[in-house]
Image (cartoon, rainbow, N blue to C red):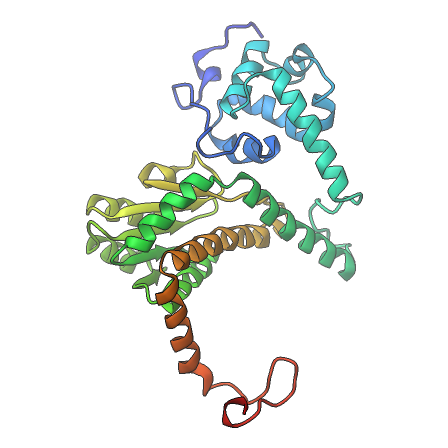
Length: 325
């Protein structure tokens, strides 16, 4: 293929996409960035991405010409791919891949990152699931944009009302955020029914916040709810694995996760863990902004449900009567 790619090859969306430098810290894993940005890359750049993801350690040793040939594209496209993922050029990509490979080998000498097979015994399943969850948490924290998170904490902490939207598995994460905010005295609601999501979004306004949670960033129900909330003046926040997905187009702020989906969907559990990691960071940040009020609210809510627990401590011993005296 010639150095000058066709218009369709340059960008399937019609225009070259800018690097997501704001969404990803330059020191985070290049493989994490590639996976998250993959759906928004041009077709020729996606071929380069596949070559890199298939064998990153080999790419770290290859010349730009070899990578271009393997991807059936040009050296110019490889360079453009590097810029699209926030890397200055191919030499910097090789260095980043070499460092990432070394870190991965140091973390685990076993191949636990693969999909779960029907032939796996239970110990193997436990190992693979726990490895996928731990990796999702680590990689999410590694690439999380702290400045963006800080801004989201500010708007949520100052919000008159926070509505959280999510469907399917994301609905459970939405409910978790709502419950946490509610326990520290913040007015919050979680919705998963499409009609209720839309009607709640329609009554939000300036000073309110709408949070949409979608791993793929392509869930139309959640996207539409954020769009309506934004049209009515609310600040919108998206929590997604893909920073160029459709949901980001209706979000004022984007918080990205880093979870790998697999055929047998061991990654489906990891995506939930990654979302909860972001949610927990957001919750703690909001609680810090209102520390005294948060502590008082937590004490009050704990006391409110205390009478509905058995008089047994977590260690199995009975709680003393008379308040422990």
